[in-house]
Image 1 (cartoon, rainbow, N blue to C red):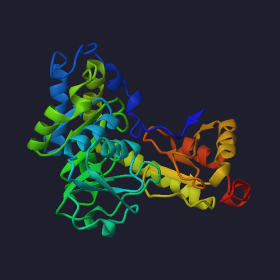
Image 2 (image 1 turned 30 degrees about the vertical axis):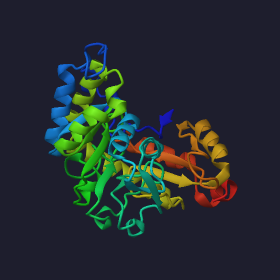
Image 3 (image 1 turned 90 degrees about the vertical axis):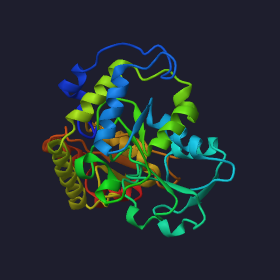
Length: 326
């Protein structure tokens, strides 16, 4: 069975060095009481050196978005949020006291001039596209969730914003995708990190990341290199070209490769499974009705032969597209 839907973009979840790094035990408490361990600080310092700004660990990308947005939001704050932002961003804004201004997807011109901040994904998890970040307003506080881009895109794998020459005020990233572990981080100015340590409820009131997980994340961060990123880029190009040759038009232009097929996505997912490809359908309410899709994800660990088999299992768009409503 070929897994064509994993977020293990660089293949590091199965990397021997990353898996061998797991050592230690549970932290036994929150970071602010008894759960702080040397590996937590080592990981934060490694992220800070990599991104050139202080960082704070969270237990997941969900917790990171909840923490940073809840901490930044005040009663009079107005925050613009992309219409296709991840559920964790939406929930973080709901938990804050800020007024959420939903703007059309990837449309910086729709952001009102009087907002205090805007938040967007660097690489959108369902459509696989990178928004035009250089065109976004430079005045308000900027928050970019780079969960699906860090480790994969930009110089040194610093994300989509770095790829486009943009330096957002706040970067949210995860260790559970490109780096093959789990957990997340928020990176930004020192004052932001101080604010999060003192007010981010999803940081303050939870048991710290287990030592083995943090150690794997640190190993994954060190293991992610330009060679793996080049392999991911080459695999992505090969797979996208194969789909285009078959008549499909996948969304985006990165390693997330969605093929929108409509309501019959379930039937297509079942046929792929029968052909030895695991890529389950994405359905409502994750996406809008009529936008059901197969979201393929490419990994540096895929072989060219495996990617060709996935494309062959999907089949020509002319034959299968009519059957599946595209």
